[in-house]
Length: 249
Ligand SMILES: Nc1ncnc2c1ncn2[C@@H]1O[C@H](COP(=O)(O)OP(=O)(O)OP(=O)(O)O)[C@@H](O)[C@H]1O
Ligand SMILES: [Mg+2]
Image (cartoon, rainbow, N blue to C red; front, top):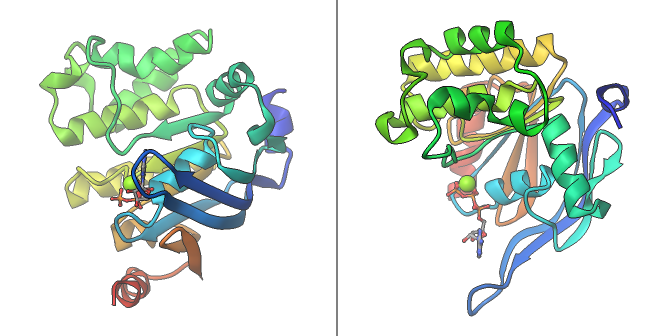
């Protein structure tokens, strides 16, 4: 399994009738109710929907961070629903970058060590030219020695994005990557995700509440109560807004 086999596939991410039910509470929570989609290599897709509609669950299942209750998840031609836990971890390290909604930075590691962590875990040398490019683009130069607790929400978010990109994954999943950022910084982050995606031929999936962020995607998928109810191709921010308002009614 190598990067070539992944990028050679036209469909980068495919979900077939994916269900996810959480049974931890008194009532089962049906977070995903039969999601099927196919996203092409190099495409940028946004997922929108109300709070609780299943966006994070969908991203987690597509990235192999959570197991679907049923259905198939195929990334780069590999059915990740069938991989052993070890192989899944290795696959994720080699191919997937993930920006968590809650950043998930390691508290006792410096900003620099947090950014380098995926490369270290994958047993790779850090590419220092790429690292300094990311540090400059994310404006993290003065923060590399700090601990995550000493960062603002927006700074932590930018560290999380640099960390997701450091190993040059073929697929990037980003859960509200601009949620803690002001609009100017949010636009810069989006720009970096887009130019990096183009340069590295990455497939990008972004969950967002922000219609302007969604409008930067080629395709916008609308999720409601665990089901995909609509899709828009190259919509404007106004069109995304109208859809979100219609769903909220
Ligand atoms: N670990 C869990 N255990 C039980 N229920 C869960 C769990 N994670 C999520 N859920 C439920 O699944 C549904 C979908 O949650 P999810 O986090 O995917 O929503 P979301 O669209 O990402 O929301 P938000 O916009 O607030 O981040 C919700 O009803 C939520 O309460
Ligand atoms: Mg979420």
